[in-house]
Image (tube, helix red, strand yellow):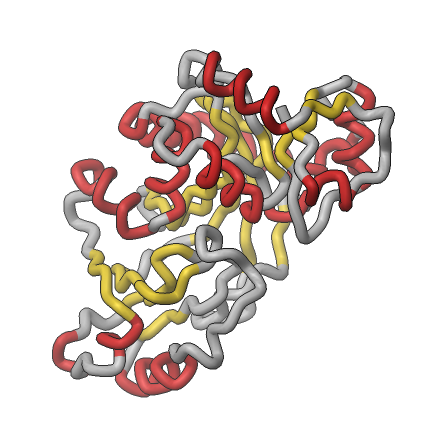
Length: 289
């Protein structure tokens, strides 16, 4: 079942939904985005009935904006709670803390950020919204000069957003250890038994050590074959910790020189944002199962 929302849905995804006659929830936003009556539209009440009667119903969204619909209609369901546990980066760190006992993090309000003295800070570190998206409000802080620059950017006026609060909420931030290593983005899902099915893996390239942008990604057969088994094992471990089944996700991790894998974040119910990495194999190779 597909839950479509703003800001963008690709023709490739629409064609896929049509060709396979997948159910698509007829929300007001989805109908505005897709003017195609030939799709297998299912009204919201029927969709909610299906999901409530069968909580393991597979659901996929193209955008995290759609998470507001799940929160509104299924707020106390296991699915909604799993989504919240991944979207809130502080909660996510708490839930997997036993797997990474040496990883340090702290949740803090936006107001409290400006009261922190440099001596209280664990340089180097990363600061970012506890509920975030698209690298907005993310800063790598290696010294006091970086900290002053970050604080100048971390204010209500500069953090205004078009995204709903369940996608980007800048009232709370997380300060956490800076993770060394190469960064990778991974599209995958947990099947009905909870096992990970890897769909693709991309190397996230940066222009400098302080760059946090989402601009350049590259992939190859070599990249995937080199890391596939260990990444699957790693994501399976986290999935079991969080009881994830029939659950699509987009993970960002770093792998250090010793081969250690540390998660940056796991984004729920979608692959690469706005139909990016999810369309990749279909567009380049015609592979679309």
